[in-house]
Length: 319
Ligand SMILES: [Zn+2]
Image (tube, rainbow, N blue to C red; front, side, top):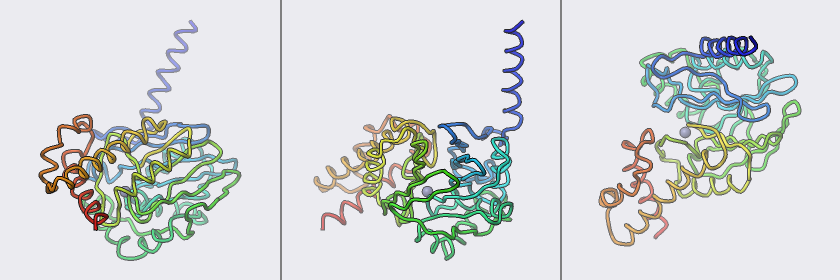
């Protein structure tokens, strides 16, 4: 009898979390999962923004304090933020007190608008250069890009930039939850902050790391800087690391595979460069050495670009 009851209860529980998760059809069902003490992450799809995923693709984070909530990177659009808030409310109905934005890429912060609308007193933190860029041309570029890629699914989205600047070494306390800011730029962009939740030894890496997904490096990024930022993150010796995309876990999951990828790209490009090869020749020569990353989302589209990005950086340092 006990076993049957347990079975019924667990089937009900599984069904209820499934039913109430945000259902994006073929993209999957999404809800917050506990990753550490009072820390939760909603792991987004690994795909690029599209009408099917409504632009949702990042990993919103949530820290629960006594009187409220702290959100890290709420998502990619106003409309996505509404859905993320619904999922947050299944974890806790406390008010959102603060938001941290890890960097300028719109898939991480354009959902600020939905949270600010519901909680006008929320304090939004970001790197000073992210604040400048979000309030300038970059903010508008990201709003337009997201609307285009999702075929209009994010059309109500407007720029709501962070108002509070934070930088390397800053300490922020929110209702008894202690955060420390780590900023090693340029890395993924020239606006990155990594957010350490001291209470639980969790580090939110932003897009300085991915798992089972490769993204692009933009004009402001540095692959060599990204290596330094991840080596620095490893030295912090956290219990839990949250990448911008892909699974949360120990450093073995959330840092080392991506770090090794970037280091391997650096090594093969340096060797090719020393042998007077061009970037496309290096790509052809070494692609088989990356077979363990071929299953990662975005490998096909990004690998050649990564070789080119690294080539340009190594060329610059050679002069
Ligand atoms: Zn990014």
